Image 1: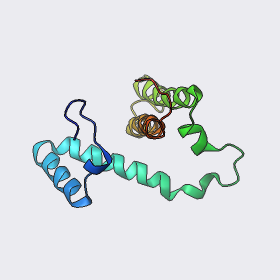
Image 2 (image 1 turned 180 degrees about the vertical axis):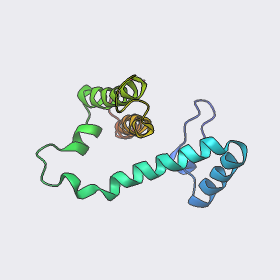
Image 3 (image 1 turned 90 degrees about the vertical axis):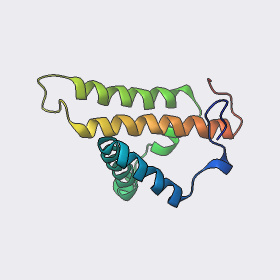
Image 4 (image 1 turned 135 degrees about the horizontal axis):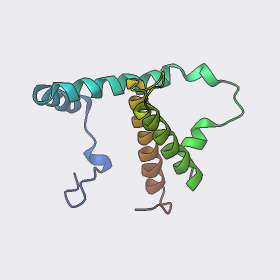
Length: 127
């Protein structure tokens, strides 16, 4: 780990066994956070299992989410905002739906991945 900025290098990425140990430590110290992390992993994984859901779509969703333009950042953050606003809304059928929190986190993860990819490619990104 690069302690100066707290960023992991490729060589610092953990192996599955180390990740399992980290998850066990989190479970021991904060079981509620552990449960939410596992639910989030399940949520993200389910998006890969539903891959064929939009087959034949004219919109290149992956290109849109991970694109180089500001439009992609706006889309990801707009979607995250949409889900958090809907979660916080009152007197609506979808108010306080925990799935919306997972969706918000997922779009935030898309944005983090997009920025990471651009930085790896040496593209100009906002720091």
